[in-house]
Amino acid sequence: MKRDSFFQGLKVVEFAGVLAGPAVGMFFAELGAEVIKIENKSTGGDMTRGWKLPSEDPDSPVSAYFCSVNWGKQHLMLDLNDPDDLQIALSHACRADVVISNFKPASARRLGVDAESLHARNPGLIYAQINAFSDPEDPRPAFDVVLQAEAGFLYMTGEAGRPPARMPVALIDLVAAHQLKEAILIALLHHARTGKGSVVGTSLMESALASLANQAGNFLMAGHVPQRMGAQHPNIAPYGDIFNCADGKPVLLAIGTERQFRALCEVLGLEWMLEDPDFQTNKERVNNREALNEVLSVAISTKMFDDLIPQLHAAAVPAAQIRDLRSVFDLPEAQAMILEEKTAEGIPTKRVKTVAFHIKKKKLKWKWK
Image (tube, rainbow, N blue to C red):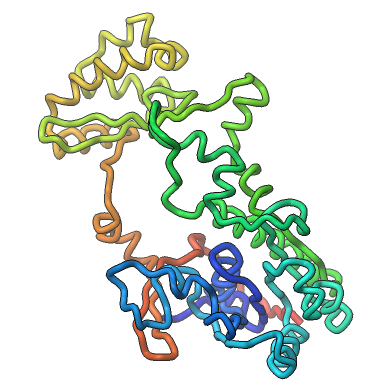
């Protein structure tokens, strides 16, 4: 699989495991950087190598989970408590442009792979640290679901009257990865202008809090504590509401404007709702969500899915079918985002790209060093 050449010549050393740090490393690998992943030989490498589904080969050295964020990297199995292995790791770090770390600070200092020690030997280095909590010395271990709980996501996620539901991907890790990527890119710009290195960092907790967005705004400005609402939206109706068609297939609506609501009513033959004071504005629809959904449910239950969806799309009404991943990866857009690679052992692997943007480069001569 051909990689982009945007960061060709950039060397990244990754002292990170699980998801957030490795996702940052893979981002740079996809864009052409040389990425060397240092794994702990004494523990069998990144712990996600063993996070396998029951259907996966138990003897494989990698799992599908591990492969999802470890494309395009060189893997070095080293025991950093062994002086010779540590020197190999340090030799790479001292020649790197970027080091990604999720070491605990005390461990990094003991090994000499902390920012201060590496900057003494490589002043132009960008040292990128990811922690669980804002205090890097906080001893609490934290996986994604812990941060989903601590940052309020778990409380809000799931159906009303039922226990909280974990988001089905490690979203806190992924938003932390995006925060760290942005910090590194700013540091690269600073380095290109000044030749100076930087120490950048984020935490899962801060990244999670930054991603609360409108839910945080609802609380901070209106005192509203979000409750579990399934796919529904606290500010808009119908938005995220799901209705069954005559053939039993579900359709999801996401009405964000008054024009879209008018178009929905016209498609469903419910023009009378436009004159009903209970449904004329979004505010009233939110206040009368249950009555609104009863009307929409009856109307949609008379329509066949394959007839309704084209009508809604033609009227520019935001609506969707609810796809499983088999159906998702039948889509041309999804097929175009699959990256394939063989491991050192010759095992074929697949994952989806982490880079979802496009760059048209001008013909400029540019060097990172």
